[in-house]
Length: 467
Length: 96
Image (cartoon, rainbow over all chains, first blue to last red; front, side):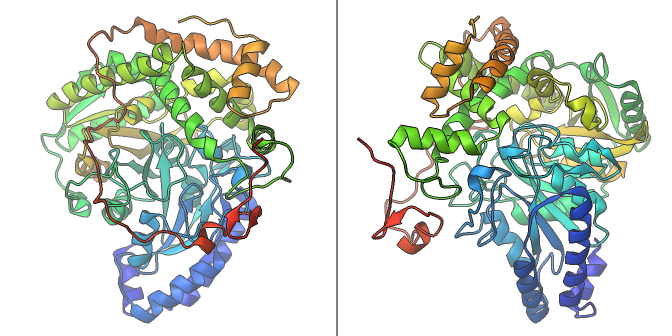
């Protein structure tokens, strides 16, 4: 997408209604082959195009925007990838969706994801949903949990940005596997009002796009305080797009030593190190740093907090007010237990039960409270390191997109361990970006940069320098 | 903390979570939960004596709104997504 396109739409040089019809046809074609969409919202897209055509305004004028399924779009089925929310059509737009519509973005549909975000590969889709396939190799995963968003960004050849969401790495992981840009903002920077939550203290909405510029543009629109969301930050929003292309001379990069060692693919290491050398050529200074707390403990800390929070969040899904209903038989507990048995996928069940266990009397202090204390230690460690460094860099994922047949062999714990590099910034609420940095063994590798709270601009500056 | 995970424990917790499991699921989950909880117990190694409890990753203090009525969903909208309703109310399973 270029500003040229948007200008042409505004000046009516492009017939946006016609353009949108073509885009919808393309999305349908891509979806039938790769399964990126849970819903394609044709009527809403046409309505949006008509509106843009009439007013010819907006920062996004005419740009197609896909929305991760867990973000509510008024009148469009929004299931967070779960059967238990089948048929749920929100009666309101999430704040981010309101802002996109206001800027002339055209909502084309809801993207595929791991059920509620429970996965790193988009293979834990809800009952009855199709698994998205990697845009570069259909035998491989897209990454998760925002897999549909990253895949569609890669495949769409028309101006398009996707709105994704990250709890433990779900924006940058699929961006890395699909070779696109994923930008996860600081916790609280973007309103979560209208997000079907996974874990309240960890969820962040952010863009996946083809370029850093497009991601910055989208963040500029969706960031900022929202009175409807109590954890949304009141701090002013930087003009992110102004930071695209800014000189990175003197920028201090903390290269996370442990992220390049054992467990990281050699070819991925090489690509990310090459990228760091290019950044040094452009004037950045690289220094090795070590983050023992985050490296060792972020994964269990993240999973415990996430599971505890999700086990309470998902309690509201019980076949009463929205989503799947079963026939009203038996008492309260029988009915709820049955609805949940029939409509939650296996990983959702695992996380609900583990989260319930970790909050039980006698376990709460040892697991849940302990994890919240370790989280403080991890945050302290990052904050201290980020006093000396502008950003921290590492591979986004320790490997490239794996094959489905290899993912099938992993135990749940091995699945969780794949978040080893992304769990840290997520548990600490730090903004992070994944930038493509070449191919390793034919598949895209990503460089991840982590900034201090509210330092998204530095990530954008760095990302555009690498591009 | 070390816990012995067995079928009884999994069933007990799933009942608390209001989530029925099939026998096959219970059998599958026992070794998986055991492996996961063992790995999570690594947090015991961290000295957290003086550590704060971070419910949020960024500091958020006393977020309140003005105590006044604001527009909310119309009754019809609130009921738009349910099959189980009667006379403008949600209809639930019997409570007793």
